[in-house]
Length: 218
Image 1 (cartoon, rainbow, N blue to C red):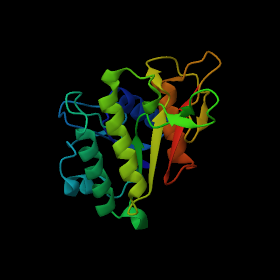
Image 2: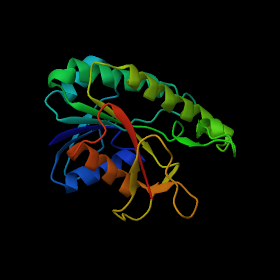
Image 3: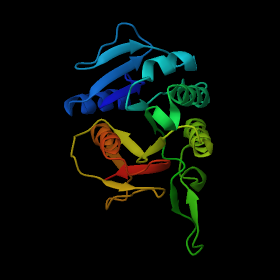
């Protein structure tokens, strides 16, 4: 399988590239940096600013992973970046003959139990549990998901990781879900970047969540 990874130099992108290469896939690692190289992958420079260039990069691939990250001073740049990747994938054939797109997103739109006795669920974003300084990037990720849910031109999947993801061991065991935040026996929602990458690679190899969002956590 040929997979193009945008944002290949970021914390999640590095692990996703590494995981895909280890499985024998042909990986194109896309970054803004001409001096970047990923062992076992082909490096390409692109800043995701022009859909036509994106289409040229992804044309002929089986899948595209968008692991792009915006500057924290202007998190809504993520919305425009992802929209351009979506347009590029559409120009490269879209649902008919283009690559599939998997967008690495956030956990803020996942559901948790609401106030005790209410029987209702609320998003993690609206629960009041998240620090205020996190809300801009959380809101930008939610806008990306909302745009994907309206899209009819491409074959997409949105990945919401656990609430906390850090550099850690590659356990190879975790749980999958769709719209509800997964919490472990320790009361935490967490996963390592290495296992996060396994969940992404597994979904690319054996799709279960086309046109949907999914999540993974311990």
